[in-house]
Amino acid sequence: IFNMLHGSAILESHKDCSRVQDPYSLRCIPQVHGASRNAWLHLKETIEIEINAVTDNPVIINDELTISGGSFHGQSIALPLDYATLAASEIGNISDRRVYLSLEGQTNGVPKLLMKSTGLNSGFMILQYSTAAIASENKGLCFPASADSIPTSLGQEDHVSMGSISGRKLLQVIDNVDKILSIELLCAAQAKDYHQPLKSTAALEAIHARIRQSIPHIESDQPMEELLTEALRLVKSGELITLHRQYATGEIAADLKQRFEEF
Image (cartoon, one colour):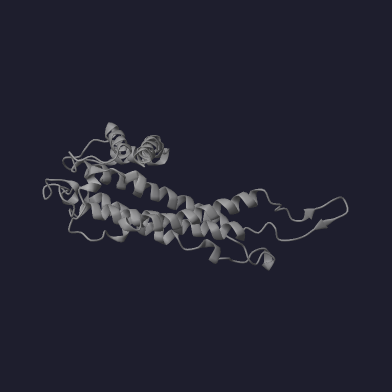
């Protein structure tokens, strides 16, 4: 984040302003997002181990030896899947908070509801309704399926992982989070417009310009479906992340070179 914002004129304009601290959803992004990332890394590691493990029952050693066991049990994946579902949901939850903050009009030059003519227009208010509803749906999907085992097969299979349900819920939450992030993308781009003529870093300016190629600034209430669909496509494609990496790599290298020369 430091590298992403280093040299931003918008950031510099807030030096010595009256606001002492930002809300947690802004100030604690590394801690919250980082904790979710750790959950994903744990799931990735576990899946890689299990993909390469023996899960047969019985395990056939040779023509003379077979061993009955429980290597097939999915608990080792079910628990990380449930944990990852919660981790993904938290990304959506904190994103919804940032969407809400962007509508408050507490930043100089940025109007309430991200639109100048509110009253006649509801601005981006309904979009925040959507993020709040989706975030709440995700909370319900976070109930761990692995905690809800039920016996089958006349009691022989008396404890099962329910990992398949965990996986399905995780995919649903990820899809929901993508929708929340796409709305945050729309709100962030709209808020950025009101900071002109101040500029951010070259990387973030390039991202904003790319968004504006297919998503225009919104002056008054209008149907949002097509804009949301395009924002969702940008989020899912990873195009903006790739664009940022291309610019950020050059900026960081140039900054390091300058500091070395000054030294």
